[in-house]
Image (cartoon, rainbow, N blue to C red):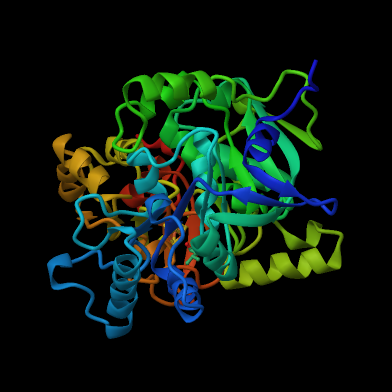
Amino acid sequence: MTAPTTLFEKIWRQHRIVERDDGQALLWIDRHLCHEGSFHAFDKLARSGRKVRRPDLTFAIADHYVPTRDRAAGARDPEIATMIRLLGENAAANRVRLFGLDDPDQGIVHVVAPELGLTQPGATLVCGDSHTSTHGAFGALAFGIGASEVAHVLATQSLWQKRPRTLRIAVDGRLGAHVTAKDLILAVIARIGADGAAGHVVEYAGEAVRALSMEARMTVCNMTIEAGGRAGMIAPDDTTLNWLHGRRYAPKGADWDAAVADWRGLASDPEAAFDREVALDAAGIAPTVTWGTSPEHALPVTATVPDPSNEPDSGRRAALEAALSYMELTPGTPLVGIAVDQVFIGSCTNARLDDLRAAAAVLKDRRAAVPVMVVPGSSAVKRAAEVEGLDRVFRDAGAEWLESGCSMCAATNGDMVAPGKRCASTTNRNFRGRQGPGSRTHLMSPAMAAAAAVTGRITDVRELA
Ligand SMILES: CC(C)[C@H](C(=O)O)[C@@H](O)C(=O)O
Ligand code: SF4
């Protein structure tokens, strides 16, 4: 009898080329995704006279710098245009498949790779981007890496990694009406803290997680990094296999059957031990929004802005005070009713088809009271949404329907929230200045962001008449 093992351990062992006594292992990497930020690594590779070792396992996708308006004109800002051009040049020089600005499959790397079937159960997948944790939703071991690691993977298709610890987060019971994966993960982060999963690979389990769609699972795994986690993962099941079947890069025919036979074994054994376990009750989770400048500053929308004077630890008290002052909020103010200047529906967290459907369901036959940008997660999501008429719903509500990319999530392409303005956003980070210098961000689900659009205030979508 072999000892019971976790899903993480199974993938780790299958990819380990060597493991040293200090816990560092050299891992084989099945998929490497690159966006515009990878130019440093390509430079390093070129300077050492090397080429990409496995161009067939490397994919380049333009997302952070792409314009969301008037795309045919390209990026106007020369520095931004250079970033997009460099990705294309580096991909071409290394015979790497590029999904560039004009590609019908362009989109945010963490939306596009799953859509194309590049993300597969049991695989190791890396990208020079922290939200690579998204891909763990398929039962892959997927994590973000730094620039020198990107260069290492480009050159060798392998990577040294320190063995992480394991944390299982079990969410049992059922989520209530209008309570989504975004609320679930914000509630998790509020509970364990922005560094609560540091050094750990998180496996999400439990009835509420099993009930989530693939899109929703990606939302959960995406934000694992906001709890400091190395990676997030969910064991593959019928939901995963049904979603993946028939996608462009998914195995076909007999290869599919063989892959499925392997993937069916990818679950933590019932007796497998985790370094830590956390349990939550889904029924206790309300629509959740952030009030501060860290994703852990999240509360049920029915709550009030916290009072730092209740915090006994002086360091933490000062941090809360600073967050409130940046956000220009007063302790005790109900979250419901806080006026927002604009709404952003987009990002690798919440701009898949399901997310756009949820936002459109709220905006249907209503008008937005504030400016709203809707940026689909990929060009394919955009087309699919248009087939369903979601673009009409958004436009009729007065929202802008734009081209896919990271856009106002990190404001790298120039789409920004103006200083001092408050944005209800479906993104994953509410750091100071994240959506532009001086911007104020409230994270929430697509349905909640749509509700905020309708009233111009933070609104409990369950109460929207
Ligand atoms: C630019 C990129 C490296 C960065 C990340 O690592 O996540 C970005 O995608 C973000 O969301 O902040
Ligand atoms: S959408 Fe936002 S979080 Fe996702 S990769 Fe782009 S900038 Fe990062």
